[in-house]
Image (cartoon, rainbow, N blue to C red):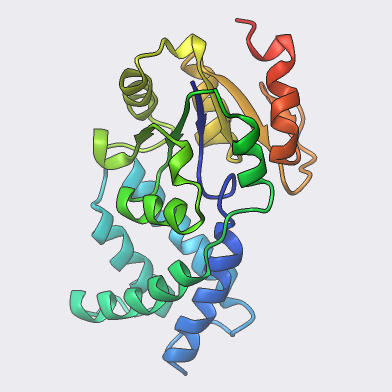
Length: 230
C-alpha cells in the first residue's frame, strides 16, 4: 500500500491559503493587526500553532479554527459566531482555490495497479472535497484522518489505523509526504518506508527517506530496491 499526504504533496495548500487569507483581510479592513503583505505568512504561522494542538488531541477542530481567527485578528473577545463568520469567509475562498499539483494526476495514473491510500491531518470532509474537486479521489481506496483516532500525524495511531484499514503490515507500506516531522520521521518510526517530496529544494540533509522533487519521480523511486528494504 502506498499512502499519500494531501496538503503540500498532492494539493497546493500554500498558494490557496495565501490568496484566501488576503480575501479575509480585505473583507475586514482595518481589523487585522498585520500589514496586507505580512498577513498570509502570519495567518499560516498562527494556523500551524493551533492546528498542531488539534492533531495532538488537545482541542477540537472548531476550537482550533476559532483560536486561529482570534489570534489573527488580535481579538480574543470575538464570540464563536463572529469567529465562525470570519472563518467561513476564508474557507469559501480557500476551497474555490485549491488545486492539485500538475504532477499529481500523472503520477497516480502511472501507479495503476498499486493500492493507494491517504493519511492526512486535515478534516476528513474538507480533505476528501479537495481530492474530489481535483478529480483524483477515485485513485484512493483507504483513508485515515484525525477524527478516526483522535490524533493526527505524527501520532502513531493514525498510521496504525491506516494500515489496519488497508489490511497491511506497516513494513509493507510506503508513505509519501512533504513534512519532515509529520510524514517522514513519524512514518519511519512506525516501520513504514517514507518518501520525501521536497518541492522547495530544502538544504536539509540526513533525512531517513528517499527524496524526490516531483511526484513524477515517484515511480522510479518505487522501482529502486532500497525503497522496499527493511
